[in-house]
Image (cartoon, rainbow over all chains, first blue to last red; front, top):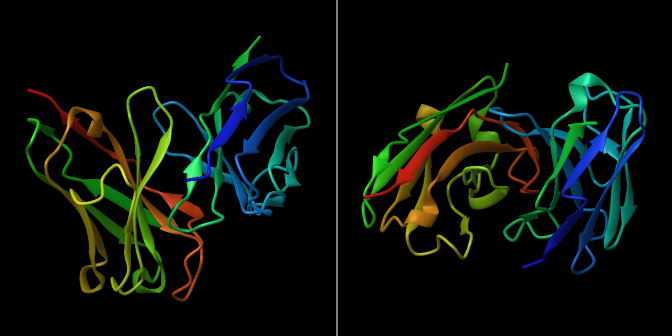
Length: 108
Length: 123
């Protein structure tokens, strides 16, 4: 299986900060990478797919980049609603998909 | 509005069995593949199983292969997960998730999730 490694595991930031989360794949996954946001007690929500495509309804302060094995999720100006845990997911193989370990974005 | 509502989660003893259900509404159920994804308490997400739009193809994570069976009833807009030989490590919130690809294609990208049903395996 393809292993997905996210960093950092926890991130402390303030409202208005630019935040970047990294996800690395153990082998190339082209651009088959998604990002999800999960708030406590809630289901994950799709933010980004195909590495850089913004899901409908997701604020434009979220952006994704990368290809191959290294990917980033950037929040250009952190808002109070953005404090959550973020997961990357590779879907290079539809039956061998895997998630990263998650990055918790906390209030500084 | 797309809705996925899971049910069936309970406390069960190790070695026991359980069937989870997911009732779908707000979209044409038999146009999409469906998945189960789980999350152990305080942990990350783990994909469990996938079923094609017609039930003809099923896939499983190695951790559940041979113990879990995914199925669907398109006439009832429902997805199921039969869980046998349960272990403590199967304790998790089980989510039903809709594949984003239309028309029989599978991409394993999840655009809608249910609220989850909690399975606890404990003696």
